[in-house]
Length: 232
Image (cartoon, rainbow, N blue to C red):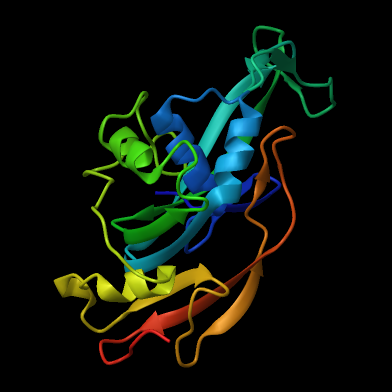
């Protein structure tokens, strides 16, 4: 998996928890929406209330990627139009006389990670509904990936239904797997309950789906779940 954070130069870093925009994109892809349907993406993101429970952190791995780009090469973008690169002294002459440079990227990934995501929609009766999302995750319109296209799910994504007053309460009520009996890290929206010793953070993880740029801040809480703690 790859819970992408801020990309700095050619380093694609990851966060410990999935961004609100990433979950929005995953669900929109399952529903079969097109990227240019930005108003539908924005509205779904606005309605999502979600938290996550890191049950098994796994390990982080880094992929080193290279590509030989010639001076006049163009690539396809998510906007559906080819895009070239400006001429630069960085291009070196190759044996055949053409000029090229080597593009280098570093992309981080979570390997063998287990994460439980709890979400609801508000308002509940607007389309798509939670039933629509559950059906789409089980029968997606297109292949799904978690963060980056190489990250295909290894199991069913929809884990079932759980009633609760808050997102935190749901994350607490679902039994922990055997490998997480010592506890698990949680992240949930501020205002959805508290845990002893938790902390508040501001996340920039909401995307403007028209411009493709992230902006704004969303208050969340992070804490650790232990078996004896109850929701408050």
